[in-house]
Length: 104
Image 1 (spheres, rainbow, N blue to C red):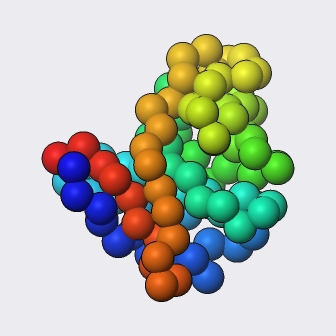
Image 2: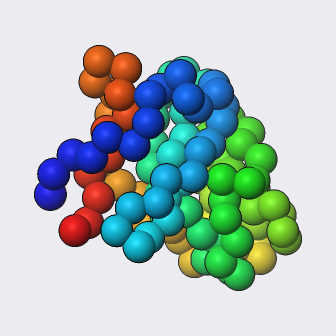
């Protein structure tokens, strides 16, 4: 799988999330409190709501509709009604660009 440039790291607030659409799929790209970057599926597994509209707290994302919570480092669902984990994808920063390794 190739690395794809999603955005600049400064486009994501610290403890923030942005939406990235690629090849017909939506992803959520996070910047942690320690300036690490992570990527997961962009839709909540409970009801397909865009997670980029949710609230980031430390290493967790809260879905904006029903307050289900995921650990965005692993994709694990950690609070109901979210009960199925998100897929997570490799992410890194290179020369200020956020690069993602996504399925074709």
